[in-house]
Image 1 (cartoon, rainbow over the protein chains, first blue to last red):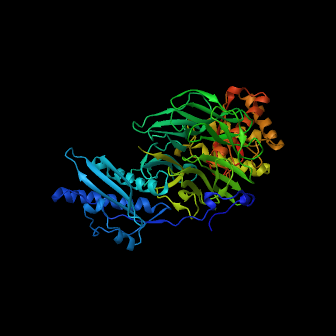
Image 2 (image 1 turned 45 degrees about the horizontal axis):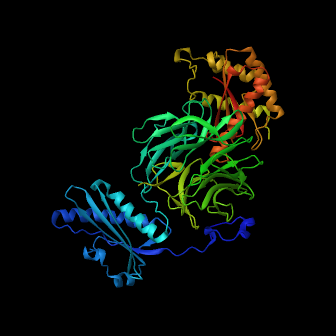
Image 3 (image 1 turned 90 degrees about the vertical axis):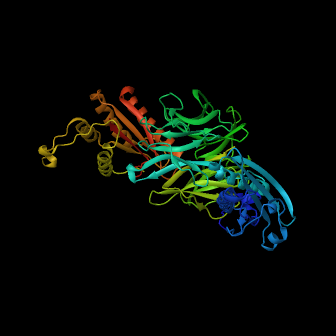
Length: 428
Length: 156
């Protein structure tokens, strides 16, 4: 049992994290085949095999799937894509079967077909076709993984999505911290800032076309916005103030952030293009780390107005503030899950900082990690996993992901030390 | 929790020398090889001289706060009073007040706490007659290891 429940909340009944996890579904993914023949057929089979390996890796990275071993020698015929021999997969122990094909088109693009089956019932559950350029085969594979995930689990998969984070290298005051971005499978890794100035807390816009972050370039921390396509950068607002904790609204047109006014930190909202900010909180002390609910109607944030950091909820216009967390210790950095059900947070108690979750109504609280220096939770698009940062005792940090239903956190591979992760939604 | 003045001064001296080479926009006096002399005899010029005088006359450039606190304790106020007197005598000098949060805190809260400590420090200097134009504030949150729960006042 890796999960630790807060004692006072044992009475609160079952959280998803407290339920007995369902066993992972055994899934068979035979090599994607092709109706094409000759040289073209071989090219398609090659792409199909690369895609197959990616689908197996995608599904194997989740807590819900356990893929069977697939080798290239398991040639799979084209007719079997739509008419699988279920008895064969039943005896192999599979509960779910994913088949597919790659077909070259006359315009040079490729058609990917993807089919999901319930092996026990011998029934098709879903199918989808994607037309993409040959260079986009990875996305096709991720979309196929996403189809399998959403069909079986019921929420979107996290495969065709992006992760922004801070890449760290060097030591002490010379530590370099750069905004980096990659596909959620680690592919397509790139740096968005040069590293001359310290960068913190990158946050992706919903479309992944912009990243806002906190820069120390102007001598004091302030929010800047990067256009990912052009690499151009600008300050979020023109005020000469300490601004931090940026978060996009679900549709991407607005941004929540915190600003210091004298010795008071409050939550503000502003157009994502800049302009005049509107103040949403007024209490003395530190109000920060505000994020929208996925429907945009509510905002959850942290405040130390009551003496210790706790989570509060208010309407999107700043009205109707009420406290959400009442446990021991302090609660920080809340983030609403994309499905609206959960709020993840960093909890600080006698044994350090850990990542926890509670239902959006404040009940069903559970801690998912053991700390002692975990922070910065960010939901996977599936709402079934939380990405976070874990610091070691020697000033280094790494990114980890932990399933909502509990289990050991797994490290996310990045080229250097990583912190402040932010996981985007699924790219359409 | 306040530390002794002697320890405080030592720690600050180390920090200032380590940090000054990195701070943007600062002119650092570097003795040339043919001008090398024994360390004590090296004349401090420019910003280093001002910094040394500021630290010596104020009893330090760093003030410390309690755990999670943004309240200036009496020893901090003593240092700041001396700093304010010095700054009134040197109206041409601008100082940057850099606040630090607590290392065990979450990132954004630490940033805000560091900014609050810097703002409280600034407000106290202003209360003692230092013109607002002479001070600026910033926060390092918990992003610079080794100097938590503090504010450094740096001649810039």
